[in-house]
Image 1 (cartoon, rainbow, N blue to C red):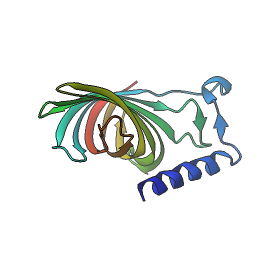
Image 2 (cartoon, helix red, strand yellow):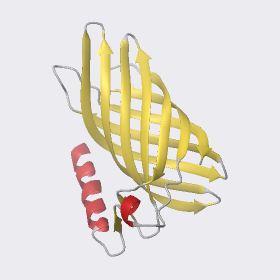
Image 3 (cartoon, one colour):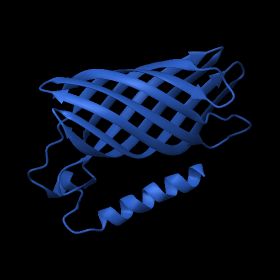
Length: 178
């Protein structure tokens, strides 16, 4: 079920990208491309399968996607680095998620997309890097230099040597637009 949902999102994205007026590599091919970056502090409630919930803290950097862009500039890339620790289990997570964002008015937008992750999991006697994919969705509010958002992410992380870190995370963020 989980892998089917991810496959459907990826196929939909590929189909939309093949439509006319979508731009590939606008970072290099579109002289009007503007990254419109945002930097935010994040706090997350991370719920790994089979382990206790943990609180994660980190940074998020998001910007208009430079690899593929919709005709109305609605694809934003979210990159996130955060750490969590609970009962001796420490996780350092990097996530990369391009999302199609729909404007809702008043600086508010909502969107969703696929997400890739790399997690460095450390516990007494064990330290492994795990990789996975999932889905992410969120709501952002932008007003001038101010930025506030919330999101939910689910990752299916590949098991390695008996270590597993499939997780669901819900987060809040506050930052600045540049």
